[in-house]
Length: 108
Image (cartoon, rainbow, N blue to C red):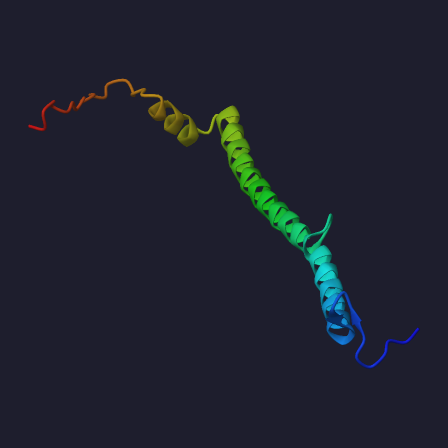
């Protein structure tokens, strides 16, 4: 049944109601696309999360590689690596003098 020229539904002109319903439908579809279950917004957030995790993995892999190289240097007896590790632990060579600097309390 085709609406008449000046027909109304619930007191609202048919043409105006039709426009509002089409607009509401489009708005609903766009909202579902952007914010629905696996919508665009959630997909982008997941993608950013994956990128952050990949960056962390790269950083950890780099640190791990450096630690493995240091461990291998210590295992094979690399003198420079052994001395560096000993000094980091507060050890000194035989015959070296140790000077201990203490801060005075009270800022003087």
